[in-house]
Image (tube, rainbow, N blue to C red):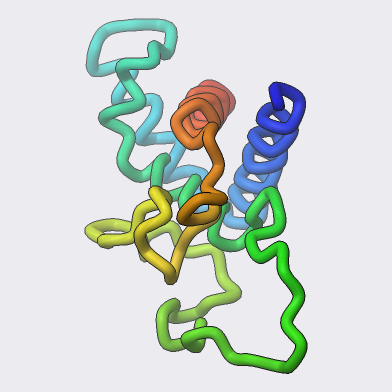
Length: 145
């Protein structure tokens, strides 16, 4: 269980960093937010408490999870071709990395929004949501700092 949790967290960080490298404007905005939050407190090092003020960083992580879920979401195979609620209707520019789509959005990864559930939902929801999200936020923030 520990290895599974660290492997998926590593995948999310890798995908988020690769998307940030591919999108320098988004990377610069995320990096500026991280540095601004830390320096406003007069510190030289990032603390876990600082992450609560980094809203854009959380949007970057949510968008990375939307585009690149670290584990298969649907583990069952359908017998016939289906269209599940039409993704293009839910997400404008569904194939692009746009963290701004999560600013002021109701979507969260707690498993209640069926348009977005990278950690699964219901009885099969990932038990490590809080651990995984905290690790990814802390690692990504330190890399950007």
